[in-house]
Each structure stands twice: as C-alpha cells, then as structure tokens.
Amino acid sequence: MPAYKNPKKTRQYTNEFKAKAVKLTHLSGASVKGVAEALDIHPFMLFRWRKEYREGKIVADKRKMVSKKPKALSENERIRKLEKHVADLKEENDLPRPTATNQHWTADLTYIRVGKRWLYLAAVIDLYSRRIVGRSLGKQKTVSLTKASLQMALRNRRPAPGLIFHTDRGVKYHAYIAGHQ
Image (cartoon, rainbow, N blue to C red; front, top):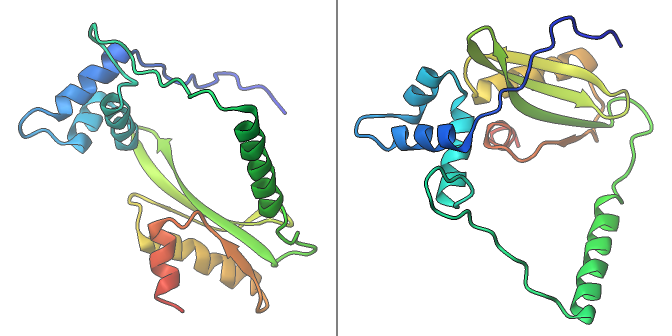
C-alpha cells in the first residue's frame, strides 16, 4: 500500500477546548449545530462532548474527573460472569456463514469530511465478497439516503429470496424496512 505524501492528521482537542465548546452551547440562543459550525467540528462530536461533560469525563476547571471503580466480585461471581460472557459470544458467533454472494448483506451510515463540509455515506456490503454493492452520498442523514443505497444494491445484485440484511437497527434503516413489510 503506498504511503500518503501528506497524511491528514487527526485533530486532538484539549479538555479545556471541549469544555468551552460545551459551555458555548448552553448560552442563550446558541445551538449545537451553530457552535459546531463556528468551531469547524462536526455536530456529532459536540453532542458526544456534551454527554461526556455531563458524565464528568470532560473537566476543564478544578473539579475532579469521575472515576468509577468496579466493585470487587467474589471468585464464584467472577466465574459466573465470565461463563455467561463466553456463552453470549458463542451464541453471537453461531450465525450461519455466507457460502456465496447475495446471502448476507450489512449496511451502515457514516459521515465524512469533504472540503469544509460534512457528507453522509450510506453503504451496503456483501459479507461474502466483502464488496460494496450499494452506496449513496448526501448532505443529510435521511431515510431517502439509506433507501437509495439499498435500492442500488437490490438493482445491481438482484438477490434471491432468503437474503439476510443486517444493520445496527438505526432509525433510518428501520423506517424504510418497517414501511415495506
């Protein structure tokens, strides 16, 4: 894989910056979207910072950061908990594996920065071939964006009945699927 000539660095923000950004959103008449745009960050990031600030994970003043110490478990409780975790993992991994294309698809939404703005990418991937079979790019995260990526996949691949289609149960996919049952 060729090396990037000018790799894009991930921005690192200090807790002071994050706390100030959160406090700006609490000002009268300020919106998260407006503050995020003014600071050149994505609104999702600012929403996450607000949540972390509420939970005490982000502090800029002299407050102490919240640290939750797990309570000590007895050895029997620890073993029981580990056995349950192993059983859950076995059940999770007991899904049928695809043996050909168009048996299992998965889909997700993400956002990407293009220039100075953010766009949303909806993609459908065939789990057997690991290829993107449907995609859609848009300015807003809407049902029509996810619908377009799924329709592209269906149009391009024409899967037989029995296709397993998995998403993270996001509302944008759920709204489309629920309307077509």
